[in-house]
Amino acid sequence: MAGALALRNYIYPINYVVYNLALSINPRYALVYGNRGAARMALGDYQGAIKDCDRALHLDSNFSEAYNVRGSIRCYLGDNPGAIEDFTEAICLNPIDNYYYNRGVLQYLQGNNNEAIEDFTKTLELNPNFIAAYYNRGNIRYDLGDEEGGFEDYNQSMAVESGDIDAPDEHGYYGRGIARSRLGDNPGAIADLQKAATLCSERGNTAFYEKIQEAISRLQ
Image (cartoon, rainbow, N blue to C red; front, side, top):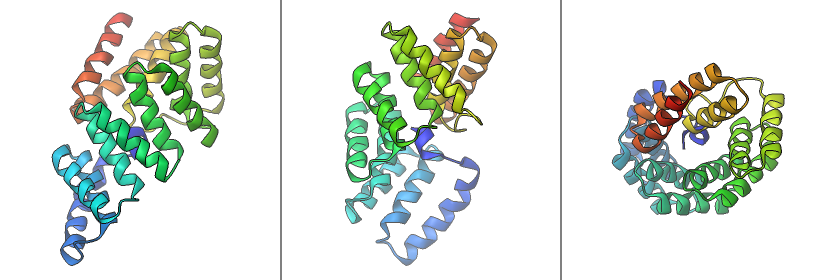
């Protein structure tokens, strides 16, 4: 899930060459395999990325970020059980906010609302300024009939929002877009949803792209 990965595509072609050089010198460097896996993911080479993550984890079974990257790729490829397993392993090894957020997003997309709320709540305990987690948790609460709780999360997100959603986080833009529509800001909602759709299109995330387009159609 891109928000946690903080992918920056414009540097990855250069980094990819550097990683190849490093591995030609030391083919047992787990960190470089993990980094090259993230680079391959950003470049759309999902199968190559999974192979690099597998190799990284073969060399270092405690490499939490390799699990996180592989989980994100598996999510894009539709392997949701595998993605949940990888995110959970990443959390067990290194319980940071991004990993809880990634698993929460996937739980949300699968309709596991209670589990998603738990993960977003843990995200916010670890990082009270994680804007996208507020928006997504607020949307779930609203969907479950807890409109007061939903608007409380929306208000909290706006109180701490000093910048933008993490640039590569399509789920963050989607969450804020849905929240803005419920707050009556349809132009802002459509703008966020269009950003989310663009990111999905770039990454080949077809299923989520279609979900976003349906949301845009309802607002136009």
